[in-house]
Image (cartoon, rainbow, N blue to C red; front, top):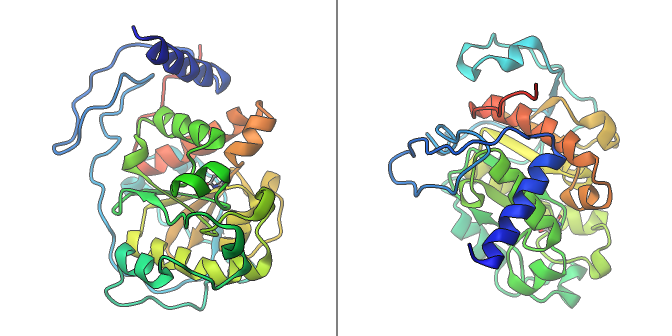
Length: 290
Ligand code: URA
């Protein structure tokens, strides 16, 4: 085995140990037609990529909250319909309407190659639009690009991005099965938190991306994404482990991978949250620890 392959494998196994997965077996489950096979996983990925498709246009609806329930472990189709209580404060996007025949290409073109709509453009190198499957069932939303992303023009490619990739792979998916983007498309100087005017200027493009992709599940990575979409000031500790509804799409909030790097025990919390998304998406969960 090449030293770099070995190092990658060791990093992957360490991540699995960190999140409490210890049962490993080789699994060559069949792969959906048209999808290339993934590397060996810690558990089956047979249904991981199956049925990725864009949904139909949906009207705007208020963000709503759904407490986790016993029915969460049932397949999505056989779960009883639940009335979702409405979150008090409206999300930033609640009033925004959909653009007919919108596409990711059109959104990128509308942003343009030299956007100067907010002050983040002054020190930006590359606009980081988003990456992944335009028909993804699962979308991850971060805060804003960091130095590596600003240099490469792709979200989550630095250290936090490597951890996100490990999380995605632990779910039995590949990075290019999902879609990854940020609230703001340009790097805030010194990686500071994006300011309200920057979020307000840039987030309509995020909304359009979500409307075009229309995933089954949105995962907000960190408080900035969660607060932007849900219009809440609640802490991540309060937001995680429960379903919200964002414009008819189920939304989960969890810790940002950069927070997990600073606070490794939180990786296990994120894994719990991601397993809720896996149940919703019909992805097989890894065997429980004995
Ligand atoms: N952090 C983010 O929130 N987004 C990125 O793209 C990279 C790091």
